[in-house]
Every structure is written in C-alpha cells, then in structure tokens.
Image 1 (cartoon, rainbow, N blue to C red):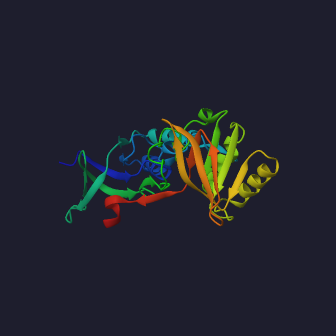
Image 2: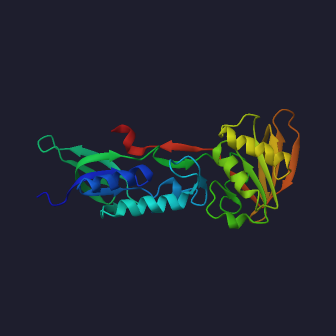
Image 3: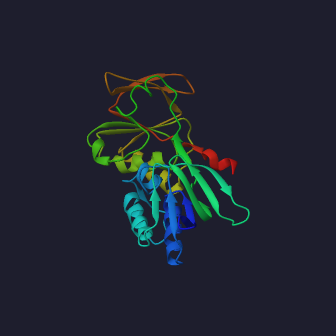
Amino acid sequence: MTKDITDITIIGGGPTGLFASFYGGMRGKSVRIIDSLPELGGQLMALYPEKYIFDVGGFPKVLAKDLALDLIAQAMQFDPEVLLDEEVREIHRDEESGVMTLVCRGGEYRTRAVIIAGGKGAFEPKKLNVPGYDDFLGKGVHYAVKDPVEFAGKRIVVVGGGDSALDWTLILKEKADRLVLVHRRDGFRAHENSVAQLQQAEKDKEVEVRLFHEVSEISGNGRVEAVTLFDNRTDDRTIMEADYVLTFLGFKPDLGPIKNW
C-alpha cells in the first residue's frame, strides 16, 4: 500500500527546511518535516530568539523569533506532517519503486524524495575548558541568550570574538550594569560594522574590552559570583566580580548519521 508514502520528506526544521516545505506545498506535494529539536525554527528559536538579524533580504533588521514564526506560518499553510524530537538514522531505497524508507527513533517513514536541510547538523556548543564552567552552566554561565531582560542591571562578562559575541555585547550594553568583552587576541571574526560599533562603544565607555585576555576560572557559591582573567602575554591575573558569563565560542557541527549517507 502507498497511502503512507509522502512525496517529500525534509530533514531539518530550520529556515531552509521550512521554506522548502512551503514551496513543496505550493507545487501540490505532500510534505513531511523531521527535526531533532523540540520546536521548529532551528537555531533562530533554539539559540537566539531575541537577537536581531541584519542580513536577511528585505529586512533592515528582524528579530530571530519573529522571522522563525513567519517562516513557520508560511510553511504550515499546506499542513505538512511535522515530527519533532525525532532523528533519522538510516535511509534505504527500494530499487524497483524508488521509494525510500527513513528509519527513525520513533518508527519508519516512506517517501519519494528527501531534502536534507540540516545545516551543520546538531549543534553542540564549544565549552570553555576552565574550572567552574560545568558547575555553573545554567547558573550564570550561558552559551545562548533567550531573554535579554534577565540581564538588566547585572555585571556581565562576554567571552568570544565572533558575530554572536559582538552582537550580544552591543545589545546588552544598554541593559547591563557593567559589561566586559573578553577576547584572546586583537582580531575579531565579526562583521566589520559590528567591530566599528564595539570600538565606538568602548570609546564612549559603554563597554570594557579586554584583548589578549582569557578566562582561567569561574567561581561562586551556588551561582556565578566572580571570574578570573589572565593576560595571555604576561600571565597577569585579574579577579572580576560578575553575575553572568556568556560564552560565544561557536559550535561543533555534528551531522550524525547524515554524514555517512
């Protein structure tokens, strides 16, 4: 029987997968979306829903969660089947019919075509390998910002030199009591415009920037209370009171079984 066969199965429920689902529906195809996360939207919803995005065509700036919600609404117009918290482990193709069977944790699903829209796959944040990081993860140490209001009036140490580190520094400087950006070298991987804004903010004394510095320890009693920094040129140490340590060090891509297909 073929009633359970979907025309298109999309692996990944982020922006690319959602638009693929919309377009499949526009062409009159039945669509199934499979994603390992508990909600659609990919990194937009999972990592930085409250962050503005500036590089989407047609939007001078758009809040990540708003973009995700619009993409979801667009895709849902054609009632795709959505399977969340699910992982595709194997794909088998019937040579005679061309139909593929996707073997997942929760069952098997048949489809005529597969679109892999998983990006870099599951994203595991790179850890700061220092004493206290694991102990205070979720207790003042975070690798993502879900609600900027949480950081109002707080002392914040941001670690990193890429787009996320600079973007959140520029966003949170208006809310924080004190904000210090720590970066291990004097070059940034962020967009040039963000670097220019950071330099202006430092000049205006809105933020502190500690270049050639790294975190050696995070300490506290039940939650973060202080951070020890060291100058990687001189090894001079500084203990800094802090309520939050935000580490934006990138993510380890993990395609899982996909990399073997």
